[in-house]
Structure formats: C-alpha cells, structure tokens
Image (cartoon, rainbow, N blue to C red; front, side, top):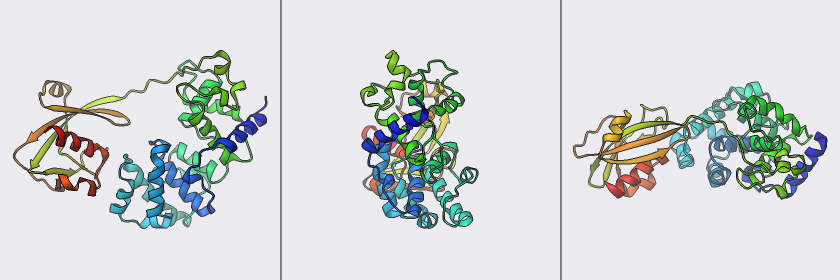
Length: 330
C-alpha cells in the first residue's frame, strides 16, 4: 500500500472518530492561532483530559493574545493553578508579548521564527506549523512514536532513538490536509495504539503494522535517568498558620510559595526519624524530611498561611501536597 492510501485511511478514521476537543472548534483564523498556542503549552507535560477544563477556563478569563500579553501575573497564575510546571505559563505570557511586539499580534508562519518564542521548542513549533499553517509536518510526540514503534516493530535501543523515528515518519507520507493529518496520527496513538492492550481491530493501518502481524505489541523504551534528591522542609506553625517563603533558591517552582527547605545528603534523610514524604516531579523523585519547628523565624518574602484560606491562595501543587501531609500528621 502506498503512502497516499495510508493517509486516506487515517483521515477517514479521524473524521469519524476524533475527540471533540475545545481547541479544535471551528473558529476564526486569529482565534485558532491563540487556541493552538495555549493548548500546545498546556499539553507540553499534561494529559489531554486534565487540560480540557483548564483550557476552557483560561480562554474564558484570558480570551486573546492581546489580553494574555497584558494580564497581571496574579490573574495569570490563578488561571494556571493546578496544572503545575509554572514556567510554561510565564513563557506563554512572554511569547504573547513578543508576538505583539514583533509580529503584529499574529503567530509567525516560519518555524525558525516560531522557535525563538519563549517556551517554544522543536515539537511545539512543529505542531503549530502543522495545525495552524497546514504545513506538511508530523510532530513527533509520544503517541506518534508509539505508532511508529509498532508499525515497524522496533525493538533495539538504536532503532527507537529519535533520529531513527524521525526518518521512519516518511511511512505516513503527506496529505493536503496537513493539520488534520498530523492530529489524526496523534489521535490514533492516543485512542487506538495504546501503551497496553492496543485496539488493533479498530486501527485503520493494522494491515500495515508489523507488530500486529507478529502479535507482538510490547514496546521498547529508552531508559531515562530519573534522579532522586533529598530535602529537609521546616514547618513553622503558629496555631492554624504556617510559614511559606517565596522560592528563589530552586529552579523548579521559582518565585512560587513553598515551605522553607534545603537540599540534604542521602544519609541525613535515611537517618532522620521525622515524618517523610515522597513527591514525584517530571524529572526528579523528591524525598523530603518534615521538621516541625516551634520557634518562628520570619524571613523576607514570606507570609503566614491560614489553614482556612488555603483554597484562596495561588499555591503550586507541590506545596499543597506538603501542606496536606503537615495538616494530617504534624
């Protein structure tokens, strides 16, 4: 089967099975640019089902690139609260400001210009080029990677490296509906070619799939090093109030409020008899000792959080997890 027939089969499946997602609504070209920009930033490290309500709320509160470029940071963070990875939304605002200042309020239609926007890397620029400008580009996300691994039944470490997968994308060929086609392939990965128990009987390209032919659906993945770090958090409590500080020390959660904490050696963590918790970040496993302190020391850029008012404050999920543990056990 040639590439053209493959693209027709994939697009036919997509037209009949695609999810109704808010950023796929038929809107003006200007709105489509904004919807795509916001959704791609949100989807960088968050699943679709999680993003949907946040996207809807964000668009309702901040409906355009112009509004985004000029929104105050408190409102901006409030609209993003709960999604985590707050550097994304700060870069999103900076990108909006750059789009207004340098490109007249419109997304640039050249990849080399797009990639200069804060927070826009190779994948995000590829997705925007395909979806917004209908360029014949298939972004290589986890879903597309999984489809390629199964189509070619790739099992060796060298076979699943990104450079090889990029070459393998030629399997899909091209379509005049480049934006839809890119999303269609990603959709097959998300809905059909699942990591476990793929729905091969519903797949439009199962007859072209080596893994389906061999009934071998196990995926090979590159071992990613996920480092473990150890921390000590000091819990200063005055009745129902807890001390939080504005983080300027750690790259993650920069400028957000956290409990006073520092990095410690593994042996100190292991020998401590205090309450401990584990928090998984995208690139790090955090193991934290919780030390309750009786004497209050209030440094600069800090405030006392009343337990009753936690829902009214803009706090990273990281801080809320510690707060929940502290409230229950200390």
